[in-house]
Length: 246
Ligand code: IPE
Ligand code: IPE
Ligand code: MG
Image 1 (cartoon, helix red, strand yellow):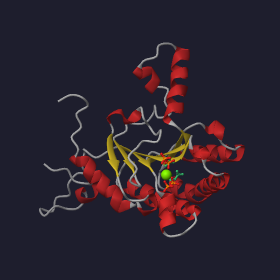
Image 2: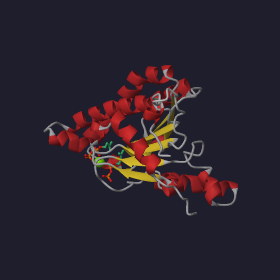
Image 3: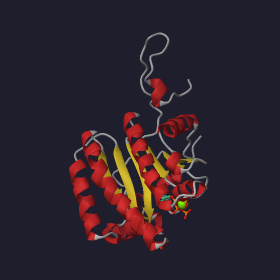
């Protein structure tokens, strides 16, 4: 039977029976939100406008993911390499992060959304660390969608930190490293999406992506939303995951 998206699964069938949501849908989706700069450049606008529109795409995508019953949405917001950008762009991104937390935390709290941060918080200002700590505490008991924001995140940094922690406790094995990753408490990554047409991981979830399905889209991040997320669910349902077996 062909799999349905969560959306079509909730429609009554011609026989009037309301079918169960697809059970083969992804539980954990990660997105490399790329293309804000190009979106702005095409419109002869400053890059920061592209980042602002990118925040709106985050809002749309979080709402859609919650409504579609996704368990975990992991968003690559700032990489360990993004500090290489000009200082004005880095500070504009930090400003957007602060504003996003102030403006959207109530909606997260009301909609049973749990916030989680991955990456190395040591890289951030005390003000941002305190804001994030407060946001985490406010949503910690929520049981709906988990939104994981990757900040000052790099997969190589994460694996090195995890390997050090595992070594301090004893044997280094795939299991003991996995147990020390920032994502240790999350379900396995099912689907990795990158927007903007680039076909690379840029140091995102390299360990976790071992058996994730990959979806590279030409759409620029500010143009992403519910339609693209639904199409990604449908594409995922068409994939045949084998995990090396047969
Ligand atoms: C992604 O958009 C946002 C961040 C990396 C923070 P970019 O700013 O990388 O946009 P492009 O790739 O230059 O178009
Ligand atoms: C990856 O995008 C990081 C985020 C989306 C936060 P980049 O734009 O930084 O990646 P590269 O430099 O094109 O590989
Ligand atoms: Mg980019």
